[in-house]
Amino acid sequence: MRVVAGRYAISAELGRGGMGVVWRAEDTVLGRPVALKELATPPGTSLERVMREARTAGRLNDPGVVTVYDVVSEQGATFIVMELVVAPTLADVIERAGPLDNRRVAALGLQVLGALESAHAAGIVHRDVKPSNIMVLPGDRVKLADFGIARALDDPSLTQTGGVMGSPGYMAPELFAGAGPSPAADLWSLGATLFHAAEGRAPFQRTTTAATLHAIMYEQPVLERTRGPLADAVRGLLTQSAADRLTAPELRRLLEAARAGGVSAPPSRTAWLATPSPATVDGPPKGKRRLPLVLTGVAVAVIAALGAIFLLKPDRTTPAPVAAPASTSATPTPTTPKHSTKKPTPSPSTSATSATPSSSTADKPHPAEVPLIRYHQSDGGHFSGTKKVSPPAGFTKEGVFGSLVEKAEPGTRKLFACKVKDQKDWFTSTDQSGKCEGQQALGLLGHLYANPPSWGTARPIYRCNAGASHFDSLDAGCEGKTKELLLGYVVV
Image 1 (cartoon, rainbow, N blue to C red):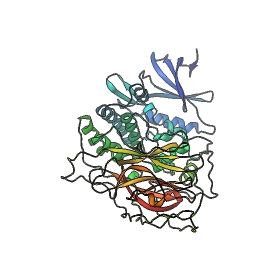
Image 2: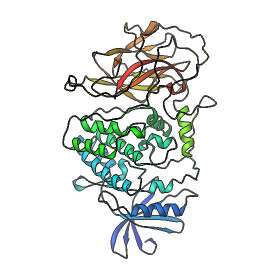
Image 3: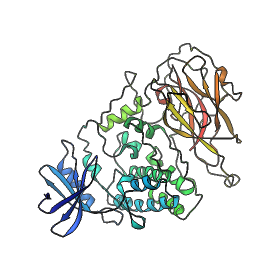
Image 4: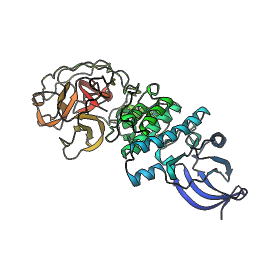
C-alpha cells in the first residue's frame, strides 16, 4: 500500500484528468477518509506557487466548497489532500438525465454562486468552473471542487506547448486576450455551466480547441429550451465585455426568480457586442481572395497571449490580431468579380442590440424561431442554413448565429439561401423578390429583423466577402475580410 507523507494511505484510484489523478486514501493520523489529488505539474512549475495557491484555497470555509485539508510534496510529486465527496458531478447528472428543469438549474446555480461569492470575498478566483468540477450530493446539495488548482498551475512566467490551463469551452473571452483571472471570468464560466445544464449541451465546445476559441469569440449560443429569468441570467453572463456582465447580486436576483418558477424578468443591462460601426450597403462583392480559416485573426492573438501553441494552417502570411469586433478601416484593392448582383435594399445602421419590452408587446407570444446555422467546407466555403434549407453535401456544422423567425412578422424581412451561378460560392440575400440578386435561389431560410425587436435580444449579422466566396458573420469587421452589408438582426 502506498503511503504519502507517512500519513495518507492510498487505497484506490477515483479518477484522472488533465490536472492529475485523484486517489481515495485514509488519513491514518485522524482516521478519516480523504481524497488525494496528485497534480500533473508541468516542467518548470513553481512548487512554491502551487503550495501557496493550495493553502489559500484551504482557507475557504463554505458548505458549497470541497474543503482542502493539506498540501504536501514528496519525491517530486505534489498532493492536495481534500474532503472526500462521493457523489456524481453535474456533468455526470446531465449525461444521464439530459437537460435539467429550469428551476433545478437555478437552485444548483444559486449554490455555486454562493461558493464563488465566498471565494471572491476572500480574494480567490476559481478559474475552472465547469460541470465536472461541481459535485451534486443527495438532495441536490452542491460542492464546488478544485479551487485554486488551475491558477496554481498557470504560471505566467512559463511558456507551455500544447496546453491551456482551465477548460477552454468554459473560459471567458477576455482570458484568451491576455487578461488575468477575475470574479467576472468565474461568472462567465458559471453562465456556460448553467447553459450546459439547462440545454443539455456545452455552449461553445467544438471538436478542436481552435474551433472552440472561435465559438467563444464570435458566436452567441442559442437557448432552445430555456426561458424567463434563467435565460436572462445565462445571456447576461455570456457577454463579451466583462464590464457589461451581470454582477453577482444581479445574477442572484434572476436565479431566485427562476427557482421560484418565474416566467419573465427585467431585461439585463448587457449589450451583446461592443457598439458596432455604422453599417452601409456596398455594391456587388469585390475582390477575389481565398477564405482563411475562421480563426486566423483572433486565434493567433489569443494563443500567443496564452503561451499555448496550436497547429493551425492559416492561408495568409501575417494574420491581423483581433481583440474585439471593429470596423474595417482599409479598403481592399478591388478586382472585377465573375458575377454581378443587384444592389440590395439598404439596411439600417446598427444600434443597441437589447431592448426593453413595452407594455404593448410584453404579453404578446414570441414568434416561432428557427436556428440559423453556419457550416463550412474543408476548402474554405461557407453556407448559412436552417431546417428549411439544408447545406449541400460536404459541409460541416460550425456553430449557431442565433435564430430567425419562421413566419413574417412586423419589422422582419425574408432571408434567402443563394448560390452564385456556376461557382461554388454560397451566400444569403435579403432580396425580397426571392431572385437572389440575379443568382440561383436555394430557398427561404426564414425571416430576420430589420431592427432589434422590442420583445427580446438580438445581434446584427453581416454578409462578408472573402474574394472567392461569401460568408455570414456576427463580427462587424467580418473577421478581417470585406464587409458587404448588414443583413439584419438574429434573435438570441
